[in-house]
Length: 244
Length: 345
Image (cartoon, rainbow over all chains, first blue to last red; front, top):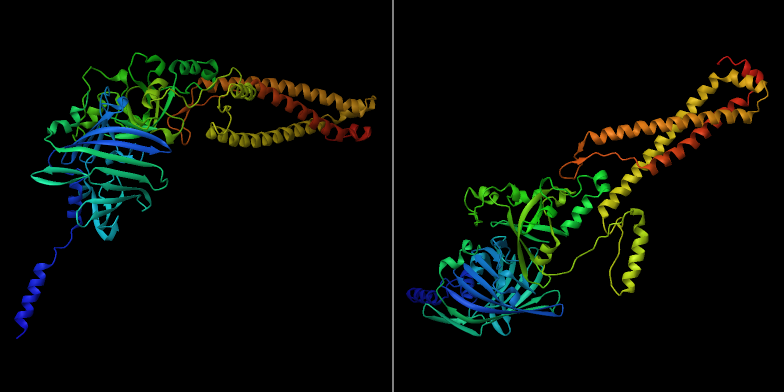
């Protein structure tokens, strides 16, 4: 006589259970707040690198759309007009006067501890295979820990240990590892910006602090400001239009 | 170090910046022409010093040019089609890349930012090592200084009239620079920190040649001893007659030693003449070698130096005199009767 009641309880419990957690969905959510947005978006990055006691400052205007991004140097004056174009995973560099763009690597050092791939939009969901590796507290906030492995050789990092907030679904911290698993730099993220696309308002990255694992004094800070949704013509992401 | 790009892909390069006119003067020096005519010369195109009219002129190792799909130099490009970005995904991309001699050089500048300059390939060359054949670029110093955003240089090379002056000059220059408050290191051309491959190779070749010289010297000494022993055996009765006439053993030994030294001098002179003639024939024949680990070929050149010839002659004549004296001394110890009745002569 208890059988129908037990079946009812089991059915109710199944209905309440959370759907299985998908690392890819977590990454997509975290990517959105770091520029991985299908529609057009524009922001400014102020980069301050302190390396071996010497500080350098640079400013970039970044325009992104889907898997493409275009970063234009605004300061210092000697670098003004230099452009880095991200076409999917390919990266091109061109400066005023250069007759053709030159293919460079996203892994190449941009300034201080920042690689070229750090300033433009983040597409970890596209570039990495993710495995849910555990749960940790990051600055008192509960977070999922994901192990990311590069899907291709031309992405910015080989392996990343990435913490995503359980509540906010934002990337809180990252440890960048070599192929052999050695830690070589860490990054923390803050989300002081707000942004709206498609009628949805969400947190947007405002600061990324990258520290050298071998020399704690070598720190590079990227400050992201003035993010706004903006339509960009596909032609600005066409490498042929960069040639003189 | 940096990246050389062709509009489709980039590959690493190692660049050397030179003053084109100074490089041309050095390579045109008679000593360089005589001893290493291939040194630093491109096999295709013109030297940097002759390409001042080409903006961004650079020389490129043949292997690197192959990797970048740039088989032609500036002078071999016909027509004046405007530069276009190649369609890297198209099957005809190789022809598009080969249609110009333009490349881009990118590198991290000394100020820490990414920099790039245009390069126009005006010559192709082979490097001295297979390891560098796919990486080397030779460019005017000003081009690389622009790329690396600096007015500094890694080193200044001083070419002396006589290489043997290098050590003394280095000491003097070092003291002067120190007195002027400049923290510069001065190193000579044979310092293994400057050219470890050269000094290591020459040390190994020196050991091999030294051992061969020892073997050849021993063979020469034994040959002379053998020849003089046979000569004296054949002339035993002559020795007996001279001894009977009152010649002392010492006088006889002196006679034979002087004769041997005279013959040795004539042999050395004729050998030297024959050797120089053979060397001239070898040099004239333009025999090309393809040594292991070296891209391209080098010309086999034989240049016997005057110092080497004089040293060999100076060693040869005492050896001839000594072995002759040994051979004569043994025979003249016999009595006059034995010498006169010797059946061998």
